[in-house]
Image 1 (cartoon, helix red, strand yellow):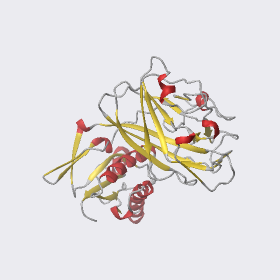
Image 2 (cartoon, helix red, strand yellow):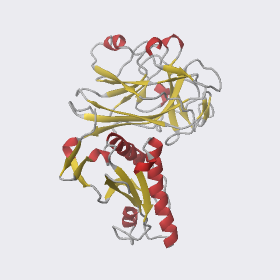
Image 3 (tube, helix red, strand yellow):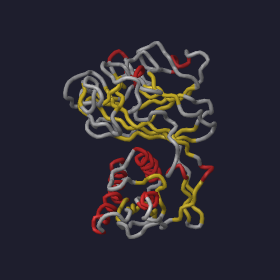
Image 4 (spheres, one colour):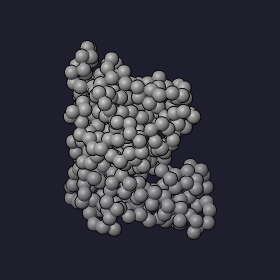
Length: 360
């Protein structure tokens, strides 16, 4: 399940989904809700487009709440990865108890097409175990299993009139970081009937790969926060040509005036770029920041460097070797549009990149 990469006469053909790509997950960061959560187990009731596919009581945290809040809540302290909300669920608990999240996709997946799935997780401080495997179910209809245990294949097959396929994301290390968010990613080929996505642990306790962790307090389980769920078509039928050692522009990474931090859309783009670089270790990247003409020259120079550095730091945070990424900034010295209009100034507040087989 690797991304497609072609080399022809020294030219790199880079699938355009790494630079654009529509997220097919509705309400991916759980920001839209029917009601602010005020008690445990209300994820399926309060979060728009999402549900709980079993009788497990998945939790919903939002800064709007005094009870189910973020960053502080009953299971620890964790800042949101994006926006004001995140989900919380047990991936491992006594008696094979499990919790899941389920979402209807914006459109049915296309048969024999590859899709890139990603989400962020963080182990809650109250957990005394960390797990290594994360399960994924793609189904034709929503699942409504009357069980609090794991969604085994036997229980899935009991869903009459439904179709599904399931797989696991097997990470090389245990997810036991209780302060930072960790990106979990994979690619898979669709069957052509998938309309719903379910995330959680599909194994029972006996077969769950787990490790005991140092803990703030014992909850006898592995409880994870989840944020920023993304599913993007890896459309290799629309290849875009990128020459090595040539400047290219991130089409959907633009900055607001006087801002250098990445927004949600920019982070999704960086995640796809990271996965490309991870599967192609011979390619290095240089990030180049730019500003519009508003403000002093020296200030714009520093701001453009901060914009490039924010992307460089994010790629390193995701796991890219820092030796493979460098950054610089040109301030307002290289505009691509008219600085006399707001539209032009916004286009000039951009980030570009260069790919090469050598170090920069």
